[in-house]
Image (cartoon, rainbow, N blue to C red; front, side, top):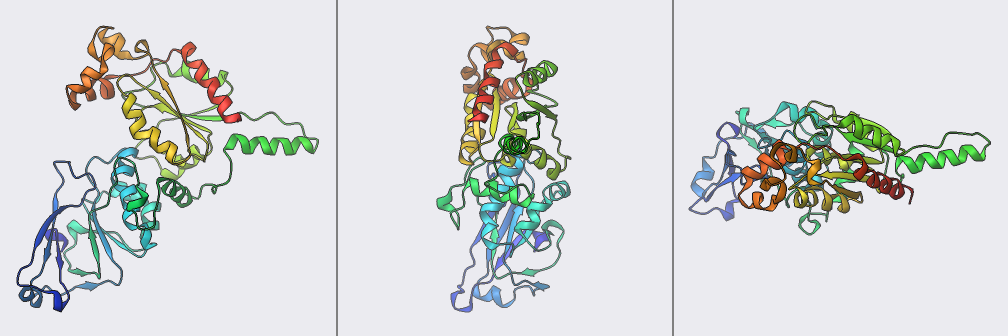
Amino acid sequence: MGANRTVLYVPPADERGTDGPEWAIKDQSRKNLGDIKEVNVKTLSAAQSLVAPECTSRHAVPAVLFAMNGIIGNPWHDLSDVLIPLFITTRAYDGEVQFLVTELQPWFVDKYRLVLTNLSRYDIIDFNKDAGVRCYPHIIVGLRSHGDLDIDPARTPRNYTLLDFRLYIRDVFSLPPEGQGIPYKEANKKNAASNDNGTVTENPKPRLLLINRGESRKFVNLPEVSSAVQAAGFELLVMEPSRDMGMEEFARAVDSCDVLMGVHGAALTNFFFLRTNAVLLQVVGLGLEREALHYYGNQAKAVMVQHIQYFISAEESTLYEKYGKDHPAVSDPDSVHKQGWQGAKRYFWAEQDIRLNITRFAPTLHQLIRTLRE
């Protein structure tokens, strides 16, 4: 009963007792958020079962009830809080499951429609607005989550891994199948074949997609960074993702590249669209070393994407320009972290931009070229 945010469980006749236990369950995977509402799950007693509300619709497939709210709105939280837990919870049903969604966000449905309609062949129900009494043979309230952007195969119905998720969404977006090499190597194969046929063609360049953040943690010297990337021998594609950007378009852009480069931030989550052995190049700002590995580095390795980190110097952070070398955010970032999330968020996530030292960064670009040629 969506209008009441209530799920009633009617036990088999021989299992009904005199008491009906109740639970209040947060249907969002990130349980520690303070503004997440609860869904009431009530087991009906023997007496209550006799007067249970009549079904206005009966369904032959199970349902999963989950929230589409919280702090979604960037790719990292969209995947970590909703899509990966939804994959963990429902992939084993092979589409034979219906989604009941609280706090439904139309933009989220539009953006990830291909994934949602692949996981479920049935209409998505806006649970908050549903006035009917829907009856299902089985219902799961809430989504299973194994941690930040992670999957523990020992806890999934079919031992799914994070690599399985990457291959799954690549398939959903009709990207080239596993086994096809990174674009640079595929282009070299074609080039060699053309040369064997007597056709002289220009040597292909590896392709690098540079994420240009529009707000914090952006490259303040983007033109110089772009020139350095091209001078190192890359074909450059610069994109600034937005919430309204079509996922199919962006997925194909990432797949067409050998390297996804950007400052630590949510847009790097799109490494899931890279091919096996492509490279995620993460520029790590001051105070973000642990987070870079925890939120992206370990996951990239798990899905067979190479991960290269460029740790900036203090002078490459605009915090150095703004506060000077003796400010704790510059000289001792760990001390800021120890004071709590708000301070760390202010300095390292919100106020920090990056001014890359091109001379210092150049060896990383050359390392990238060598890595792609191996």
